[in-house]
Every structure is written in structure tokens, then in C-alpha cells.
Image (cartoon, rainbow, N blue to C red; front, side, top):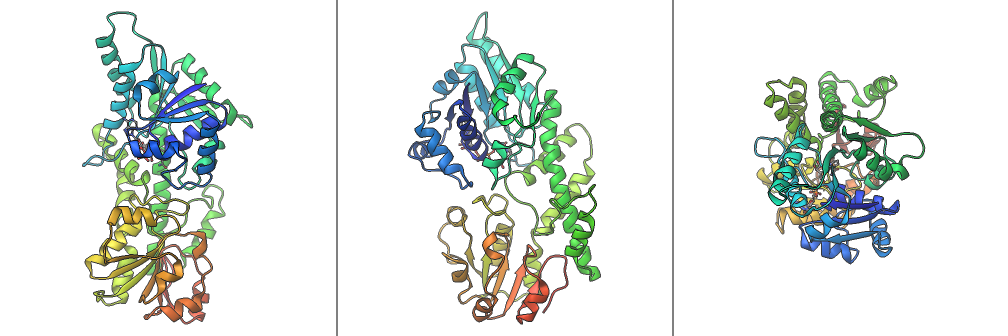
Length: 445
Ligand code: NAD
């Protein structure tokens, strides 16, 4: 099938590449000229396992193409995917300007029947807005016999860091539409990904839009709940890791997504929780649980700083802090809303210097903070330890799980680790005569 994807970010690029891999003819449109130029040369603007070869192979095979020309994009596909950003507005509600902009573009150039598929995460009711926007422009362009169209909600559930795999083998494919013809078109499109058992769930548009928010908010709730219990465990002298195993064994709870840590980040959970709170407010509904989830998360992002500040009795001026992990989670270079940023900014405010290492997010850190004498980016995790006073682990990259504790001890003047991801066995670290703070467990100092 011929598919156009507006937006070559995490969602658009991965979705476009996987659809092309399945044999569809995909044209991706973006307003970012540099990105498009790079992609045509095989330069992938983001880090996502397996994405580079997938894009390069499908581009070479002619099934995947890139362009900045929206008219070409609208003419190409019967299916027009919207996969542009929906960042938070100042009040936390979703900014729909990019989505509506694409809707206008489609309406401006379409002269035959199209199915508009919304992949961006958008508040309930957005499909109606997109439909109205397109209808308005078409009315101006055609005096009669306007081309037919329908707007479908098809939210994306991929996880950054495993995005290619998630799109190749989705858990579910939610299609929000009442239009049988559009449903059939999407069933045909996704047939290659729907072979094992039927993963397609068809529902009304508003329910599909809400499903995406409900999924992300449920996951954010699990994280904030676990962080709350972890903080309580610390107060009580209990061990959250043992509690985690104890509760996870109940199949109604399960082991997934109940790891305590330094709060959720990334481009989705923080903004989606906020956006659903704002959506609730718009219909005079007080989303009490979601507000608590958000406020726990804001505090949790500060938890490592508080531990560090207390350890150093508030005297952080001139201290050199080694940080392992800048990305908001492993296997991505994404630092949007990352807990590492909250920590680094607090450390800088207190006069400390950060010496950081991340396997993939160093370029992104440089892009965000520029060249700054308070942020020293190191090529290896060992390099980040040199001359540092303390080590802080913020992201649970695989390569941080079995470090050389002797080397850590040799390098750190204060001989202390602050572990925001509970990567190590506290007894083992204690045996190495290193002071150890983690989350929801007794500290060894
Ligand atoms: P992103 O910021 O990585 O990419 C958005 C892209 O859209 C950018 O390249 C931008 O240049 C482009 N763009 C903006 N306006 C455009 C226009 N008029 N025409 C063409 N391109 C345009 O965003 P993302 O992370 O891919 O997220 C996209 C949407 O999907 C958001 O609503 C997000 O909430 C949702 N989502 C994201 C994830 C994720 O893990 N990143 C997962 C599921 C859903």
C-alpha cells in the first residue's frame, strides 16, 4: 500500500521503516531539512537499536523515501499518517498546533479520497478537530464534489529503546474508527504484523484516543506508587527490592514496571500525565490519582540530589561528581525530561562540577547544555571517575551493572556511590568498603 508519514521523529521514522520492511511504499515528510537530507544519506537522527540498517536497506530498496515537499507527500499515500510532536503547552495541555498544521497541509493538497491516520498522542476529541480543519479547507477549495476523507485514531505504543521490535511485533493495534472502509484499509496495512493471533482492537475514536493516555498514565502510576513505597521502606528500615519480589509474585500485580528509581522521564509519561490532568479539568473532573502520580514524580527526580547534599553536609561547592547515565532510560539517546537533567542542574546550582558518561546520549547532552566548564563529558565510564569525589548512577545501562569496584575506590576521593537504580547488592558494595546509597534500602555510610 502507499503510505505517507508526516514527521520523522521516534514514531514516524520507526513506523515508516517497519511498514516499508513489510513491503509497503512509504514516503516520510518532515519540515526539518537537515534531518531529511541526512536520512537520504543514511544518517539516522536518533539512536534506536536496529533502526539504522532497517532505514538504509529499505531506502536502498526504494520502499522508503524522504522528502520535505508536503504536496508530494499528500499526493503519494492513500493513507496519510500524522506522527508529529504534541509537546506540552505552558499549562501542561497538549499543544496541537503541529497536528493541525499537518491537517491543513493534507487538506490543501488532497484531490482524491484519503484516510488520515493519527499516530500522535492527542487528547480526546482531536480527531474531530482534525476532521473540522480538513473540511474547512476543502470547502474553500472545492465548490462541490469535495474528495472524501475520514480521520482514524491509531495510537502508537512503541517504547523508545525497543521501538523497532515493538513495531515489528506489536502487543496490540488499536484502531479508532466507525468507518468500515478505513478499518479495512488499516487491517490490510497491518496484516503483516498481525499473523500470529489477532492483535487488532477496533473501537470508537474517542476511546482509542483515551486508550493511549490511559496506558501511559497506568505505567506512570505504577512507577510513582513503587517510588512512594520505596521512600517509605527507607523510613521504616525495610528493603524495597525484597518487597518488590514479594508483591510481583502475585499475578494480579506482576513483576513488570515495579522497579523503584529516580522518577520517570522521557517525552511521553510526564507530558501525557499532565495532558490527561488538563483534559479532566476541561470537563470539570478532578483527576486526583494522576495529580498525586505527577507530584510524587517531581519529588522523586530530586531524591538523588537530596541524598548527595545530605552526605556532603550541604557543601558541594567545587565537588566533582561522576554521573553514569544521562538518557532517561537505557538504549536511547533521548534526554527529554530525564532525571539526570534535574540532578545536574541542582548540582550546578550548588557549585558542583559534573563529569558524565553515557553510552549514547553524550551528543544530546552537548546539544542541550553546549560547552560548559561545569559539565565534562567523558568517553568512558572509567574516565568519568578520574578525580571525582562521588559516583552517581542515574540510568541503568547494561554496562554499569558489573563495574570494577576496586577501580571506583581508587578514583573516588570520598569513596561513595549514589545508585538511583539499585544496580548493586548493598552487602557486596559494603564488603568493598565503599559507602553506598540506593533507593528504598538501608544506606551503608
Ligand atoms: P519527535 O519530536 O521525535 O518527532 C516529531 C517530528 O515531526 C519532528 O521531526 C518534526 O520536525 C516533525 N514535524 C513537525 N511539524 C511537522 C510538519 N508540519 N510536517 C512534517 N513534519 C513535521 O516526536 P515523537 O517522539 O516521534 O512523537 C510523535 C508523537 O507520537 C507525539 O504525539 C508523541 O507523544 C507520540 N508518541 C511518542 C512515543 C515515543 O516514545 N517517542 C511513543 C508513542 C507515541
